[in-house]
Amino acid sequence: MEKREELYRGKAKSVYKTDDADRLILLFRNDTSAFDGKRIEQLDRKGMVNNKFNAFIMQKLEAAGIPTQFDKLLADNEVLVKKLDMIPVECVVRNYAAGSLVKRLGVEEGLKLNPYTFELFLKDDAKGDPFINESHVVAFGWGTAEQLAKMKELSLKVNDVLSKLFDDVGLLLVDFKLEFGVFSDGSIVLGDEFSPDGCRLWDKDTKKKMDKDRFRQGLGDVIEAYEEVAHRLGVPL
Ligand code: ADP
Ligand code: UDP
Image (tube, rainbow, N blue to C red; front, side, top):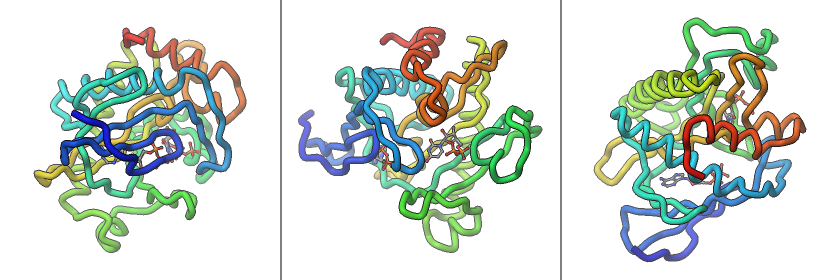
């Protein structure tokens, strides 16, 4: 397998072609962004930690029957993945109120949501990733009704698997964002990444934030918190 030219440079990862038309390389950089890319900083070790964290989680999900992009870890900062035609929609599952839900509805941070909620956002930084609903996805052709149903089913399955995984190591999975794409065989596959950059994790006892909110809110020790989560889960760093 040979690394070829850069296809796309995102805010946190760079995407490379390979000599296999069905495979890409994701390179996790240390760049850390917030507020739709308006604030960007370099955090030492972040690329390596998120790459290994993501590989660990994707393999857990795959073992639970969720189709993921993961193929194999290539280096500290690089992973080989299935090449997907990404659906430009972010799927957000919430178990407790935080972030934009708190701002939008004025509810208290930490409120237990019963049942969990499922939300959709259009992946479009220039428009500020606007909140959309299921009919928009189909009406604007971002995905079919069948693809959407699959994305929702898989998101909720991810929630079941990961809520338990984190609970077992004393962490609350508050919310998370997933991105899906279509593989060459037409199937819906989980893409992008699962790391503390795209979810909220709180210590069950102290409610300490162990995710990207440490960066967004200037709480400090961002990567130290990611490493502690990785350590609790047994992710080899
Ligand atoms: P952003 O585009 O939000 O700045 P990143 O820096 O994480 O995000 O860039 C990674 C890009 O690669 C994203 O646009 C994401 O949708 C895309 N991507 C992630 N996984 C895959 C995949 N398996 N196949 C194709 N594209 C992918
Ligand atoms: N999220 C993300 N990328 C985005 C927007 C949100 O990974 O572009 C994640 C975020 O880290 C959180 C969840 O999705 O775990 C819900 O985010 P929310 O809607 O509360 O938005 P925020 O206020 O965090 O931008």
